[in-house]
Image (cartoon, rainbow, N blue to C red; front, top):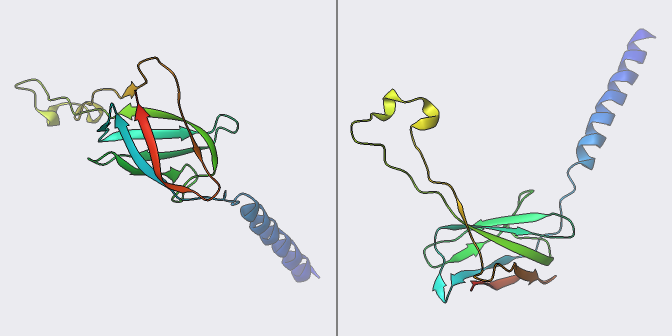
Length: 147
């Protein structure tokens, strides 16, 4: 009788673990989303893009290449983004700061060995939001233009 009871409890325990794990793995429907980011007609290279849906807070991210081209990755993983309206934030990534002459990196604490300048947000000249809509079918020629 004890063996049967143990097996029943073990089965229930495993069942609860499996069900709870499956419930948390619901992935959103992603569509293709890529394009080009420019500022005054010139490619925005080596910047970080953050697309955030104002209604849900859902987000997707990308980094541009030397030609300003990017492909979005959803914040929960997977290439693409959910369809809908987004507010786009653009950040110039930090750059390495050279150590002063005579300072040896190995003599510094780990967190100070590779100093970087802070990221800088790139905004429209009138400080307005950059907004874009990704259709339900996706879009591979999105245009992000900073004015």
